[in-house]
Length: 233
Image 1 (cartoon, rainbow, N blue to C red):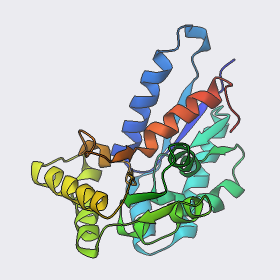
Image 2 (image 1 turned 30 degrees about the horizontal axis):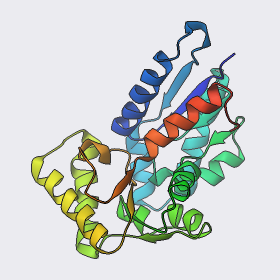
Image 3 (image 1 turned 90 degrees about the horizontal axis):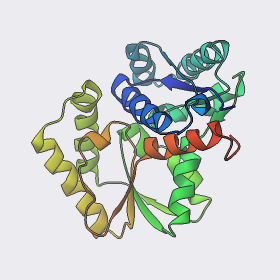
């Protein structure tokens, strides 16, 4: 019997994208009775934003743990977190969770290493690119992580928090993001991790000679493998 999947929602737009993609994959399972259940728990995004603004990652962890406990009570057998920045608090939250979590960061690292990449770019919120969420995991596997130049970092951060988290997509922002991806390619990146859950809203095609890693799509694929018994959590 398929395992029940719990989604810890943070950003409404990003969580909705994850749910939609996962639900489509679930529907593709040939035998209806073998399709896994999905439960999503969402705490108001404003509470996460307030905690992040105050650099209060302990509070972020408490919110994440609250969701995992609620999902477990609803029958979820494991959890997924489709939010890149919130992973900074994930180790604290997982420690008190009644069910295991499937790590999106590890899945991305697995894909990068499997492709033989030695240098990858990372775009996302400034708090993500200046932290160690991806840098540590990939560094331990021999992969160098390159982030955009300061001006480009600020541009990405502004696009995320002024537009993408609200579901807004503008053509100037799409063009700016593709310029930033091109600059990372010129600096030797063989691929780029889309380290904001909503970034795929702006990316319509791969930049030439540059592979794009969408963490949410990798997480959905991994969650399906776990739910269907093809891999452990």
